[in-house]
Length: 331
Ligand code: CP
Image (cartoon, rainbow, N blue to C red; front, side, top):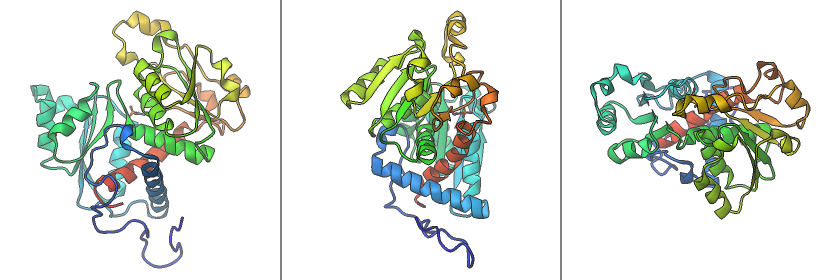
């Protein structure tokens, strides 16, 4: 891909036109679930994300979205998603209305989700929404005129995380087709693995699911994978699949989704990745985690070159820059 002349002249990516691209993929559209994306869309997102990385490396921030405003509406805690969307918008020259703690907004007075998004869209051009209820992003999109980007809806989906996860796999492993991807941990409640498995099902991959029996992948998604003839298997012990794994995607047991604290205690700490685990893994394996982690990857692993989870976060900002530019017609 041509990234332009590095040495002279004004800095402007040749692939980022200054005018609105109303014919651009995803212009004015919501991003609610990964089923909206085809392989060609993914290539487009990743191409724009690489250009964003190039531009950030060269100039830090630039004015592609100058004059545009993002409302960051988070009903659940977030470090990475909230701050990477914030950073993405700032680096693109736009502005952000941050509502990272809804109890300080009129939600605490009982304002409904439809009214909240219809209020924010009076001030903003796009709304990023995280909500504890499955389907909340779709509900918001039914009422909003401006694009809604789902930043996680309960145990449903986290599509922008899946896009950045897939981008991480491409950048770290160099390909997707032919890989064996193992997902480990809370596969029942972890929305990131739900979205990622659906995205990966567009490729020629083998999926391995490792979890306690009570935290297996939801039947609905297993049925979807069967319909698409994706080779997958389920395991209780990581050792059964570790040596054949190209990408190990570790997840946190989602304490906040458990109604019974005793049940959480029974399964927390079921798996811990440490240096001994990596000794038995492939030298080229990519170790990922959406973060936050709460003990399932030991900190001693962080310095291993296979530990990609901090790079994964950075990839996320470039992907979110790409998505913002796309829905706002600038890429
Ligand atoms: N991966 C992720 O969604 O992290 P946050 O909960 O910190 O946004």
